[in-house]
Image 1 (cartoon, rainbow, N blue to C red):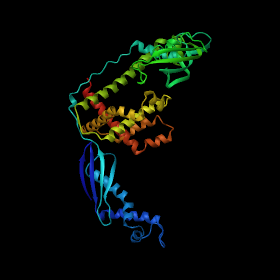
Image 2: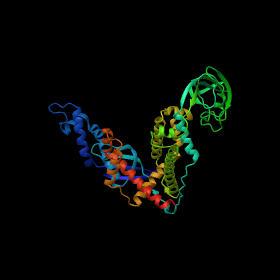
Image 3: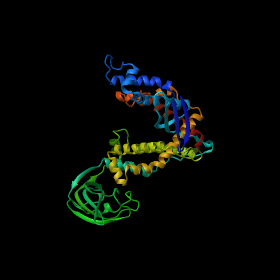
Image 4: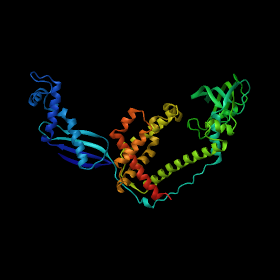
Length: 429
Protein backbone atom coordinates (compact mmCIF):
# COMPACT_ATOMS: atom_id res chain seq x y z
CA UNK A 1 0.00 0.00 0.00
CA UNK A 2 1.25 3.47 -0.91
CA UNK A 3 0.10 6.82 0.42
CA UNK A 4 0.83 10.42 -0.46
CA UNK A 5 -0.12 13.19 1.99
CA UNK A 6 -0.66 16.80 0.98
CA UNK A 7 -1.36 19.59 3.47
CA UNK A 8 -4.29 21.90 2.65
CA UNK A 9 -5.54 25.15 4.19
CA UNK A 10 -7.69 25.31 7.35
CA UNK A 11 -5.85 22.34 8.92
CA UNK A 12 -6.96 19.82 6.31
CA UNK A 13 -4.97 17.10 4.58
CA UNK A 14 -5.47 15.30 1.29
CA UNK A 15 -4.36 11.66 1.32
CA UNK A 16 -4.00 9.65 -1.90
CA UNK A 17 -4.02 5.95 -1.01
CA UNK A 18 -3.10 3.22 -3.48
CA UNK A 19 -3.92 -0.38 -2.56
CA UNK A 20 -2.14 -3.04 -4.65
CA UNK A 21 -4.20 -5.84 -6.34
CA UNK A 22 -2.80 -8.54 -4.05
CA UNK A 23 -3.76 -6.44 -0.99
CA UNK A 24 -7.36 -6.11 -2.18
CA UNK A 25 -7.73 -9.89 -2.66
CA UNK A 26 -8.96 -10.71 0.93
CA UNK A 27 -11.56 -7.93 0.69
CA UNK A 28 -12.75 -9.17 -2.74
CA UNK A 29 -13.16 -12.70 -1.38
CA UNK A 30 -15.29 -11.43 1.52
CA UNK A 31 -17.34 -9.39 -0.94
CA UNK A 32 -17.95 -12.51 -3.07
CA UNK A 33 -19.18 -14.35 0.05
CA UNK A 34 -21.70 -11.57 0.74
CA UNK A 35 -22.85 -11.44 -2.91
CA UNK A 36 -23.19 -15.23 -3.02
CA UNK A 37 -25.78 -14.98 -0.24
CA UNK A 38 -27.86 -12.54 -2.27
CA UNK A 39 -27.93 -14.58 -5.51
CA UNK A 40 -29.23 -18.15 -6.04
CA UNK A 41 -26.65 -20.66 -7.27
CA UNK A 42 -28.04 -24.11 -8.00
CA UNK A 43 -26.29 -26.87 -6.09
CA UNK A 44 -24.70 -24.52 -3.55
CA UNK A 45 -25.86 -23.36 -0.14
CA UNK A 46 -26.22 -19.54 0.31
CA UNK A 47 -22.79 -17.93 0.47
CA UNK A 48 -20.88 -21.06 -0.60
CA UNK A 49 -20.68 -20.60 -4.39
CA UNK A 50 -17.08 -20.45 -5.83
CA UNK A 51 -15.43 -17.11 -6.57
CA UNK A 52 -15.33 -17.62 -10.35
CA UNK A 53 -18.98 -18.65 -10.53
CA UNK A 54 -20.05 -15.50 -8.61
CA UNK A 55 -17.80 -13.35 -10.82
CA UNK A 56 -19.38 -14.75 -14.01
CA UNK A 57 -22.83 -14.10 -12.60
CA UNK A 58 -22.43 -10.53 -11.22
CA UNK A 59 -19.26 -9.24 -12.92
CA UNK A 60 -15.90 -7.92 -11.64
CA UNK A 61 -17.14 -4.36 -11.04
CA UNK A 62 -19.99 -5.49 -8.79
CA UNK A 63 -17.45 -7.36 -6.64
CA UNK A 64 -15.17 -4.28 -6.55
CA UNK A 65 -18.05 -2.03 -5.56
CA UNK A 66 -19.13 -4.43 -2.81
CA UNK A 67 -15.55 -4.53 -1.43
CA UNK A 68 -14.80 -0.79 -1.76
CA UNK A 69 -16.16 0.40 1.61
CA UNK A 70 -14.25 -2.25 3.55
CA UNK A 71 -11.02 -1.59 1.65
CA UNK A 72 -11.30 2.13 2.42
CA UNK A 73 -12.24 1.65 6.07
CA UNK A 74 -9.28 -0.62 6.76
CA UNK A 75 -6.57 1.14 4.77
CA UNK A 76 -7.60 4.71 5.66
CA UNK A 77 -7.21 4.20 9.41
CA UNK A 78 -3.95 2.30 8.89
CA UNK A 79 -2.53 5.31 7.02
CA UNK A 80 -3.65 7.69 9.80
CA UNK A 81 -1.99 5.49 12.41
CA UNK A 82 1.26 5.04 10.44
CA UNK A 83 1.60 8.80 9.90
CA UNK A 84 0.45 9.92 13.38
CA UNK A 85 -2.43 11.90 11.87
CA UNK A 86 -5.19 12.87 14.33
CA UNK A 87 -8.28 13.41 12.20
CA UNK A 88 -11.33 15.48 13.12
CA UNK A 89 -14.71 14.30 11.84
CA UNK A 90 -15.43 12.06 8.87
CA UNK A 91 -13.30 12.17 5.68
CA UNK A 92 -14.58 13.05 2.23
CA UNK A 93 -13.79 10.04 0.01
CA UNK A 94 -13.35 10.17 -3.76
CA UNK A 95 -12.51 6.92 -5.61
CA UNK A 96 -9.91 7.74 -8.27
CA UNK A 97 -9.36 4.29 -9.79
CA UNK A 98 -11.31 1.05 -9.41
CA UNK A 99 -10.77 -1.66 -12.03
CA UNK A 100 -10.16 -5.47 -11.96
CA UNK A 101 -6.50 -6.54 -11.56
CA UNK A 102 -5.45 -2.88 -11.00
CA UNK A 103 -4.46 -0.90 -7.92
CA UNK A 104 -7.44 0.52 -6.02
CA UNK A 105 -6.83 4.25 -5.66
CA UNK A 106 -8.86 6.74 -3.65
CA UNK A 107 -8.48 10.24 -2.19
CA UNK A 108 -9.43 11.10 1.40
CA UNK A 109 -9.79 14.74 2.42
CA UNK A 110 -10.11 15.28 6.15
CA UNK A 111 -9.67 17.95 8.81
CA UNK A 112 -6.88 17.29 11.29
CA UNK A 113 -6.11 18.51 14.77
CA UNK A 114 -4.26 21.80 14.24
CA UNK A 115 -0.78 22.28 15.64
CA UNK A 116 -0.17 25.01 18.18
CA UNK A 117 2.89 26.68 19.69
CA UNK A 118 2.26 27.49 23.34
CA UNK A 119 3.65 30.84 24.49
CA UNK A 120 5.54 31.46 27.73
CA UNK A 121 2.58 31.05 30.07
CA UNK A 122 4.89 30.76 33.10
CA UNK A 123 5.17 34.58 33.11
CA UNK A 124 1.39 35.13 33.21
CA UNK A 125 0.07 36.32 36.58
CA UNK A 126 -3.59 36.77 37.54
CA UNK A 127 -4.91 38.13 40.84
CA UNK A 128 -7.65 36.38 42.77
CA UNK A 129 -10.59 38.63 43.72
CA UNK A 130 -11.68 38.96 47.33
CA UNK A 131 -14.89 37.13 48.21
CA UNK A 132 -17.34 39.52 49.86
CA UNK A 133 -21.07 39.06 50.43
CA UNK A 134 -22.95 42.34 50.86
CA UNK A 135 -25.87 42.65 53.33
CA UNK A 136 -28.27 43.56 50.50
CA UNK A 137 -27.47 40.25 48.77
CA UNK A 138 -28.53 38.36 51.90
CA UNK A 139 -31.65 40.52 52.17
CA UNK A 140 -32.61 39.72 48.56
CA UNK A 141 -32.46 35.96 49.21
CA UNK A 142 -34.58 36.34 52.35
CA UNK A 143 -37.07 38.51 50.46
CA UNK A 144 -37.36 35.87 47.72
CA UNK A 145 -38.04 33.17 50.35
CA UNK A 146 -40.59 35.45 52.03
CA UNK A 147 -42.42 35.90 48.70
CA UNK A 148 -42.50 32.15 48.14
CA UNK A 149 -44.12 31.70 51.57
CA UNK A 150 -46.66 34.47 51.05
CA UNK A 151 -50.41 33.80 50.91
CA UNK A 152 -52.94 35.45 48.59
CA UNK A 153 -56.55 36.52 49.05
CA UNK A 154 -58.92 37.55 46.24
CA UNK A 155 -60.27 40.99 47.04
CA UNK A 156 -62.76 43.49 45.63
CA UNK A 157 -60.90 46.80 45.76
CA UNK A 158 -58.54 48.99 43.75
CA UNK A 159 -55.08 47.53 43.15
CA UNK A 160 -52.24 48.82 45.35
CA UNK A 161 -48.46 48.28 45.28
CA UNK A 162 -47.48 44.69 46.26
CA UNK A 163 -50.86 43.31 45.09
CA UNK A 164 -50.83 40.51 42.53
CA UNK A 165 -53.05 40.99 39.51
CA UNK A 166 -54.27 38.69 36.77
CA UNK A 167 -54.51 40.67 33.53
CA UNK A 168 -55.18 40.39 29.81
CA UNK A 169 -53.22 42.79 27.64
CA UNK A 170 -52.50 43.73 24.02
CA UNK A 171 -49.52 45.73 22.74
CA UNK A 172 -49.60 47.84 19.57
CA UNK A 173 -46.89 49.77 17.75
CA UNK A 174 -48.23 52.33 15.25
CA UNK A 175 -51.72 50.84 15.77
CA UNK A 176 -50.48 47.38 14.66
CA UNK A 177 -50.48 44.44 17.12
CA UNK A 178 -46.93 43.19 17.72
CA UNK A 179 -45.97 39.52 17.46
CA UNK A 180 -46.62 37.68 20.77
CA UNK A 181 -48.01 40.97 22.12
CA UNK A 182 -51.29 39.46 23.35
CA UNK A 183 -51.39 37.70 26.71
CA UNK A 184 -54.32 36.21 28.62
CA UNK A 185 -54.51 35.65 32.41
CA UNK A 186 -51.01 37.07 32.85
CA UNK A 187 -49.88 37.16 36.54
CA UNK A 188 -48.04 40.29 37.65
CA UNK A 189 -47.13 41.75 41.06
CA UNK A 190 -47.07 45.56 41.31
CA UNK A 191 -43.64 46.70 42.39
CA UNK A 192 -41.53 43.73 41.32
CA UNK A 193 -40.31 45.55 38.22
CA UNK A 194 -40.56 42.54 35.92
CA UNK A 195 -42.16 44.44 33.05
CA UNK A 196 -40.92 47.52 31.20
CA UNK A 197 -40.58 50.72 33.32
CA UNK A 198 -43.89 52.41 34.03
CA UNK A 199 -46.14 49.43 33.20
CA UNK A 200 -46.79 48.24 36.75
CA UNK A 201 -47.45 51.79 37.99
CA UNK A 202 -50.25 52.07 35.40
CA UNK A 203 -52.03 49.14 37.08
CA UNK A 204 -52.40 50.93 40.44
CA UNK A 205 -56.04 51.81 41.03
CA UNK A 206 -57.51 49.19 38.70
CA UNK A 207 -60.36 46.98 39.92
CA UNK A 208 -61.44 43.60 38.56
CA UNK A 209 -63.31 44.04 35.25
CA UNK A 210 -61.81 47.46 34.46
CA UNK A 211 -59.93 48.28 31.22
CA UNK A 212 -57.17 50.85 30.85
CA UNK A 213 -55.30 52.11 27.78
CA UNK A 214 -51.97 53.97 27.96
CA UNK A 215 -48.71 54.62 26.10
CA UNK A 216 -45.17 53.69 27.16
CA UNK A 217 -41.78 53.64 25.50
CA UNK A 218 -39.73 50.44 25.37
CA UNK A 219 -36.22 50.94 26.84
CA UNK A 220 -33.43 51.60 24.31
CA UNK A 221 -31.67 48.48 25.65
CA UNK A 222 -34.75 46.23 25.34
CA UNK A 223 -33.75 42.65 24.41
CA UNK A 224 -36.10 42.58 21.39
CA UNK A 225 -34.21 44.92 19.09
CA UNK A 226 -37.24 45.53 16.86
CA UNK A 227 -39.04 47.12 19.84
CA UNK A 228 -36.13 48.87 21.56
CA UNK A 229 -36.75 52.62 21.93
CA UNK A 230 -40.20 52.48 20.32
CA UNK A 231 -43.40 54.00 21.70
CA UNK A 232 -46.21 51.46 22.15
CA UNK A 233 -49.89 51.51 23.02
CA UNK A 234 -51.11 49.13 25.75
CA UNK A 235 -54.64 47.92 26.39
CA UNK A 236 -55.01 46.17 29.74
CA UNK A 237 -57.99 44.42 31.30
CA UNK A 238 -57.80 43.57 35.00
CA UNK A 239 -59.39 40.16 35.68
CA UNK A 240 -58.62 39.84 39.40
CA UNK A 241 -56.80 41.55 42.28
CA UNK A 242 -55.13 39.52 45.03
CA UNK A 243 -53.85 40.89 48.32
CA UNK A 244 -50.49 39.34 49.16
CA UNK A 245 -49.72 38.64 52.81
CA UNK A 246 -46.07 37.82 53.45
CA UNK A 247 -44.93 36.14 56.69
CA UNK A 248 -43.12 38.30 59.25
CA UNK A 249 -39.33 38.01 59.23
CA UNK A 250 -38.51 36.73 62.70
CA UNK A 251 -37.24 33.66 64.58
CA UNK A 252 -40.43 31.71 63.83
CA UNK A 253 -39.91 32.36 60.11
CA UNK A 254 -36.39 30.88 60.36
CA UNK A 255 -37.65 27.84 62.29
CA UNK A 256 -40.45 27.17 59.81
CA UNK A 257 -38.52 27.40 56.54
CA UNK A 258 -35.56 25.37 57.88
CA UNK A 259 -37.73 22.68 59.52
CA UNK A 260 -36.22 23.76 62.86
CA UNK A 261 -32.64 23.47 61.58
CA UNK A 262 -31.99 27.11 62.56
CA UNK A 263 -32.90 28.28 66.05
CA UNK A 264 -33.32 31.94 65.18
CA UNK A 265 -33.38 34.49 62.36
CA UNK A 266 -29.68 35.32 62.73
CA UNK A 267 -28.69 31.68 62.15
CA UNK A 268 -30.74 31.74 58.95
CA UNK A 269 -28.92 34.88 57.75
CA UNK A 270 -25.53 33.36 58.63
CA UNK A 271 -26.35 30.21 56.64
CA UNK A 272 -27.48 32.25 53.63
CA UNK A 273 -24.25 34.26 53.83
CA UNK A 274 -22.20 31.04 53.90
CA UNK A 275 -24.04 29.66 50.84
CA UNK A 276 -23.58 32.94 48.93
CA UNK A 277 -19.85 32.87 49.77
CA UNK A 278 -19.58 29.33 48.39
CA UNK A 279 -21.42 30.42 45.25
CA UNK A 280 -19.09 33.41 44.81
CA UNK A 281 -16.03 31.18 45.33
CA UNK A 282 -17.31 28.83 42.63
CA UNK A 283 -17.89 31.75 40.23
CA UNK A 284 -14.44 33.16 40.99
CA UNK A 285 -12.80 29.80 40.20
CA UNK A 286 -14.65 29.68 36.85
CA UNK A 287 -13.58 33.28 36.12
CA UNK A 288 -9.95 32.50 36.92
CA UNK A 289 -9.96 29.39 34.73
CA UNK A 290 -11.44 31.33 31.80
CA UNK A 291 -8.95 34.18 32.20
CA UNK A 292 -5.99 31.79 32.45
CA UNK A 293 -6.85 30.20 29.11
CA UNK A 294 -7.64 33.58 27.52
CA UNK A 295 -4.17 34.83 28.49
CA UNK A 296 -2.43 31.68 27.22
CA UNK A 297 -4.35 31.87 23.94
CA UNK A 298 -3.15 35.49 23.52
CA UNK A 299 0.54 34.46 23.70
CA UNK A 300 0.21 31.26 21.63
CA UNK A 301 0.24 30.60 17.88
CA UNK A 302 -2.41 28.38 16.30
CA UNK A 303 -2.67 26.80 12.88
CA UNK A 304 -5.94 27.75 11.18
CA UNK A 305 -8.75 25.87 12.92
CA UNK A 306 -10.89 23.45 10.88
CA UNK A 307 -14.45 24.73 10.39
CA UNK A 308 -15.82 21.39 11.60
CA UNK A 309 -14.26 21.94 15.05
CA UNK A 310 -15.72 25.42 15.52
CA UNK A 311 -19.15 24.50 14.16
CA UNK A 312 -19.19 21.40 16.36
CA UNK A 313 -18.42 23.45 19.47
CA UNK A 314 -21.05 26.08 18.55
CA UNK A 315 -23.60 23.27 18.14
CA UNK A 316 -22.65 21.91 21.56
CA UNK A 317 -23.16 25.39 23.06
CA UNK A 318 -26.63 25.62 21.51
CA UNK A 319 -27.50 22.24 23.05
CA UNK A 320 -26.34 23.56 26.45
CA UNK A 321 -28.54 26.66 26.08
CA UNK A 322 -31.50 24.52 25.00
CA UNK A 323 -31.04 22.22 28.00
CA UNK A 324 -30.90 25.20 30.41
CA UNK A 325 -33.99 26.80 28.88
CA UNK A 326 -36.05 23.60 28.99
CA UNK A 327 -34.91 22.81 32.56
CA UNK A 328 -36.71 26.04 33.54
CA UNK A 329 -39.93 24.73 31.99
CA UNK A 330 -39.63 26.99 28.93
CA UNK A 331 -39.52 26.18 25.22
CA UNK A 332 -36.36 26.73 23.19
CA UNK A 333 -38.41 27.89 20.17
CA UNK A 334 -40.07 30.58 22.32
CA UNK A 335 -36.62 31.65 23.54
CA UNK A 336 -35.45 32.08 19.94
CA UNK A 337 -38.61 34.02 19.04
CA UNK A 338 -38.00 36.32 22.01
CA UNK A 339 -34.53 37.06 20.66
CA UNK A 340 -35.98 37.42 17.16
CA UNK A 341 -33.34 34.94 15.94
CA UNK A 342 -33.19 31.59 14.17
CA UNK A 343 -30.99 28.75 15.42
CA UNK A 344 -28.62 29.55 12.53
CA UNK A 345 -28.43 33.19 13.71
CA UNK A 346 -27.62 32.02 17.23
CA UNK A 347 -24.92 29.64 15.98
CA UNK A 348 -23.31 32.45 13.98
CA UNK A 349 -23.36 34.68 17.06
CA UNK A 350 -21.72 31.95 19.16
CA UNK A 351 -18.89 31.28 16.70
CA UNK A 352 -16.28 33.61 18.34
CA UNK A 353 -16.88 32.03 21.76
CA UNK A 354 -16.87 28.55 20.17
CA UNK A 355 -13.49 29.30 18.58
CA UNK A 356 -12.15 30.40 21.97
CA UNK A 357 -13.41 27.18 23.59
CA UNK A 358 -11.75 25.06 20.88
CA UNK A 359 -8.45 26.91 21.39
CA UNK A 360 -8.72 26.41 25.18
CA UNK A 361 -9.19 22.68 24.61
CA UNK A 362 -6.14 22.55 22.33
CA UNK A 363 -4.07 24.48 24.89
CA UNK A 364 -5.08 22.05 27.66
CA UNK A 365 -4.19 19.05 25.47
CA UNK A 366 -0.78 20.51 24.60
CA UNK A 367 0.11 21.38 28.22
CA UNK A 368 -1.04 17.92 29.35
CA UNK A 369 1.36 16.27 26.89
CA UNK A 370 4.15 18.80 27.49
CA UNK A 371 4.15 18.05 31.24
CA UNK A 372 3.67 14.30 30.71
CA UNK A 373 0.61 14.19 32.96
CA UNK A 374 -1.11 10.83 33.29
CA UNK A 375 -4.50 9.62 34.48
CA UNK A 376 -4.27 6.23 36.16
CA UNK A 377 -6.86 3.46 35.96
CA UNK A 378 -7.28 3.79 39.73
CA UNK A 379 -8.18 7.48 39.38
CA UNK A 380 -10.75 6.62 36.71
CA UNK A 381 -12.28 3.91 38.94
CA UNK A 382 -12.52 6.30 41.90
CA UNK A 383 -14.17 9.01 39.80
CA UNK A 384 -16.65 6.55 38.29
CA UNK A 385 -17.50 5.19 41.74
CA UNK A 386 -18.13 8.74 42.97
CA UNK A 387 -20.42 9.55 40.02
CA UNK A 388 -22.34 6.26 40.29
CA UNK A 389 -23.29 7.12 43.91
CA UNK A 390 -25.81 9.56 42.49
CA UNK A 391 -27.50 6.81 40.44
CA UNK A 392 -27.64 3.82 42.85
CA UNK A 393 -30.83 2.27 41.44
CA UNK A 394 -30.48 3.27 37.78
CA UNK A 395 -29.31 0.17 35.89
CA UNK A 396 -29.16 1.99 32.54
CA UNK A 397 -26.97 4.74 33.97
CA UNK A 398 -24.64 2.22 35.62
CA UNK A 399 -24.32 0.33 32.31
CA UNK A 400 -23.40 3.60 30.57
CA UNK A 401 -20.81 4.40 33.25
CA UNK A 402 -19.06 1.09 32.55
CA UNK A 403 -18.78 1.70 28.78
CA UNK A 404 -15.42 2.47 27.17
CA UNK A 405 -16.69 5.77 25.76
CA UNK A 406 -17.63 6.94 29.26
CA UNK A 407 -14.24 5.87 30.60
CA UNK A 408 -12.62 7.98 27.87
CA UNK A 409 -14.83 10.91 28.90
CA UNK A 410 -13.74 10.50 32.55
CA UNK A 411 -10.10 10.21 31.48
CA UNK A 412 -10.29 13.46 29.49
CA UNK A 413 -12.16 15.20 32.30
CA UNK A 414 -9.56 14.19 34.90
CA UNK A 415 -6.76 15.15 32.52
CA UNK A 416 -8.23 18.63 32.05
CA UNK A 417 -8.61 18.94 35.81
CA UNK A 418 -4.92 18.18 36.29
CA UNK A 419 -3.98 20.85 33.73
CA UNK A 420 -6.24 23.47 35.36
CA UNK A 421 -4.90 22.74 38.85
CA UNK A 422 -1.32 22.98 37.56
CA UNK A 423 -1.96 26.30 35.80
CA UNK A 424 -3.67 27.79 38.85
CA UNK A 425 -0.65 26.97 41.01
CA UNK A 426 1.83 28.76 38.76
CA UNK A 427 -0.34 31.64 37.48
CA UNK A 428 -2.69 32.80 40.24
CA UNK A 429 -1.16 35.19 42.73
